[in-house]
Length: 193
Image 1 (cartoon, rainbow, N blue to C red):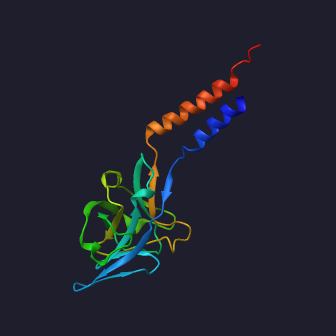
Image 2: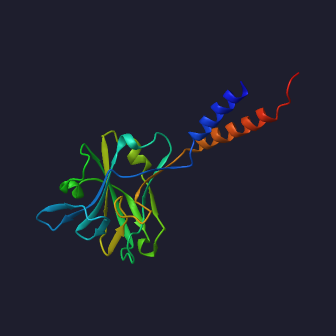
């Protein structure tokens, strides 16, 4: 009987992880020269003037609960842009479309991008946008007003792809702590004769 209870507690604790990484289902660059747009899969996510980086995610892949952060990792150095603006787009399409660069809601900016080195990700809290979106897919469009920013993609990343980090809520951590205390207390209880 005791091993069944311990197995249940272990399985419960295994389900509570520190954070979850969600990879994009599509990541590319959108080129806009003023007359037409071209979506290019060039192995990285670039924001540089008329070139916009884009990352596409499936809503069904996002774990429920917790805070959601867009994480971008430098792919090439040096990045010359100090600021990269981020826009969110609700989408019915599972791939990035040429017109996507002009749509979207401003969500915030990555700052001091030029100071980032390899293995130093930039994070932006996108929880409100992700949790309120009910479309099957959503995208993040990255752009700069000056300079360039080159980020890793799912295809080319040196082990550090760009994507979403989902961090459990504090109540999840409290549940984890209570479970551990309960296990320790149950384990140390004297046996009854």
